[in-house]
Amino acid sequence: MVNVSKHFDLNGNARSVLDDISFSAASGEMICIIGRSGCGKTTLLNILAGFLMPSSGVVKVNGRPIRKPGPDRCVIFQEDTLFPWLTVRENIAFGLRSGTIGDKHSIESEVDRFLTLVRLHEFQHYLPQEISGGMKQRVAIARVLILQPQVLLMDEPFASLDYHTRREMQNLLLAIWMELNQTIIFVTHDVDEAITLADRIALIDKNSGHIREVLAVPLPRPRKTEIPEYIFFRKNLYESL
Amino acid sequence: MKKPESAKGYYSLLPWIIPGAFVSAWVIFSYAGLIPDYLLPHPLTIIKTGYGYIFSYNTSSIYSGRFLSDAEASLTRVCFGFICATLCGLPLGVLSGRLATVNRLLNTFVNGLRAVPGITWLPLAMVWFGIGIKTTVFLVALAAFFPIYLNTAAGAQQVNIRLLQAGAMMGVGRFAGTFRILLPGSMPHIMTGLRLGLGISWAYLVLGELTGVPNGLGAVIMDARMLGRVDMIVVGMLIIATVGRASDGLLVTFLKTCFKSARRMS
Image (cartoon, rainbow over all chains, first blue to last red; front, side, top):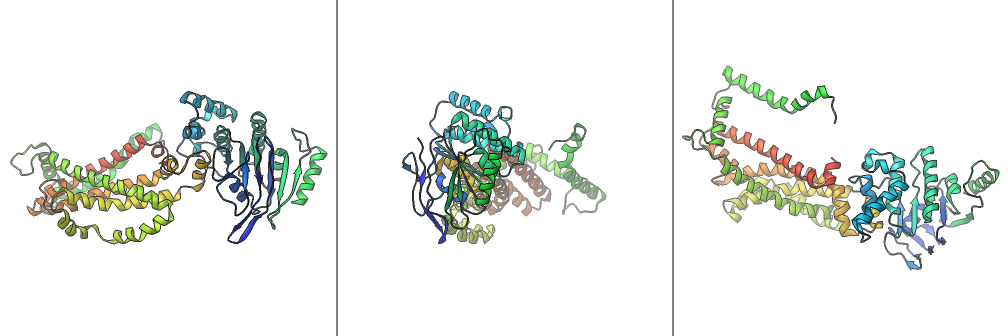
């Protein structure tokens, strides 16, 4: 059972970026955090990941407060953060090698499983510089999912991809989410992305740094962009942004 | 860089064009008598002297057959000096590249020290260590330290913080992260630093052997200067060029064999 609740305000140089934000996510839920550029979405995610400490308030996973980064909360960054000296396969195995999880044989079979999951088996011996941006993000997803994090934090992971690749990645993410049932907190500025993915959408106000509102997405999955309910919901969301 | 099959022959010749042109010009000038022998000896004289020096073929020469013992002495000095420099330069470079406090602590001192030309250390080193291997090793280590330290620091500094964060979230702590992320991530810079350091080691070897040690490739050159044996000077220089180039190649091969990051990122 995952329960992320947080409550803090952050004063970087006496400037409040995020002010008094609280929310919680249920286990297996997909929450999108949406807001205009510069509203503090990435700051929020950095705090959740443990890279930054909140100036006040606490973040809890499973009732335990967060003090530092750890494999229970894994981040998929917007930019490419694969290790350029490791192949796709070695990148995915990186986290497993660092822990005490399993023997060599079971590591290899786990890696195979996740390579298949993100459909990169035939590229396993390529280096990051030799594959496309979409593939890199798939490797990034696989290398953290293999650690079975309780929460997956995604910081505009598909923002630098082209439209078609982005759609593909969203579908892949949904498929993986259905299979593994991860809790996912997904930061984005893209309204359509948020509606396609999320169970609930949290809007952050740029000026105040508050969460303006949290909307449950009432649409059935798989979500079709052309149905009137979608268009209506999208219009509302767009206006309140 | 892949070249079509037909161009491969020419391509492998490419590094030899400039040395070849130099030697040709030299041969032409010597045969035409444009340069007197006491300034630049005839290539054949060089070959004879070099052959005798390496294979002890002309036993009447005082340099005959000394090559192995000289090379051994010099290699030992270069190796020791270079290893000392690496052992100090690498860890300090990593620390100073990553930690602002260490950087602030070391930078003024190191850069001040770096401004002092290596040759001015010679008298002091002789007072401290006397004549012999210790002086040379000291000078070589001192000179090689700076490029290794500076390049490692630059390399460690440019490693994206996101890579370390990614490691941290995958359960790799600071200590393990240094070896699994920071060092591989800085590898291209570290390699440059080590290669520059090794190159400068050979330069300071000759300086260190100025001091009247009986053997060594630098000592032979200085000895030949006093006896006016220009041919032997040139032989010594050519041998240092060859051994230096070979040691650089060995270093690169060694790094590429041992480290994925050296193999894949340069």
